[in-house]
Length: 339
Image (cartoon, rainbow, N blue to C red; front, side, top):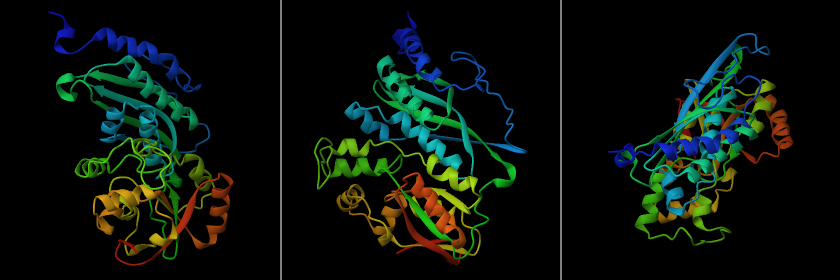
């Protein structure tokens, strides 16, 4: 009996690793010490530009968005999804990303698909100057079935200890700036898929004023906000940041609010994209439910004091960031009100 008879093809796995080695190496910088294929990845931990460096780490996954990618055989953005999501998570506390590792689980290794996924990760890493220093490819047909893929990411960044952004500096009368999203990013897809199934929605059709088939709109990659937000962090004008993922504006904004502070958000301050309106209508979702499940067009929220608003807008405009001033903080009971 051979291992391949149990559903694991070592040769295909090694073929995949060999295909991605050169792709991954393009993301390396002088701090990467190890090569792809070792038992551990090494990164130089001397941060000469930091007086008291703190490492920040996060882990997350693409989730059931992958089922749509699988159905349409479109994995070109899935690596960007996990890299950019991970960057935003540590950016929310003020960290600059350093390196990234991935886990790709699948039922059956297809070297071409694995290459597409890793190439997508590499492109996102290069865009944000992050090193992709290692990962794991696991073939488990009894867990994932023959066609399913799972993509998980692990990121590490660095920041100065006394510049950590925890939300404790958020004050009453701070302005809330919402950075626009590129669609649903990587959350809410279990509900999206249910709405699609319940309404027999054709993924290959266009609806309303959409210029692309629905599946292409749904598979737009998670946007990275590093280039937009880091200049504000470097200028010390950010009081709090919330990455709007699962839980939407309600739960994620609340995570960073200090006690006795409430966020009041006005939904008419930005144009909710048609894609969100389409699924809210088809799913017959209540307003509060839609703002809790989906980002509704706002992928990241930044809190700045009124004295720094002009400077913040100038910096955001300099990076051509799409944003709206969506509300203010008031005295309250650590909650979020959306009107």
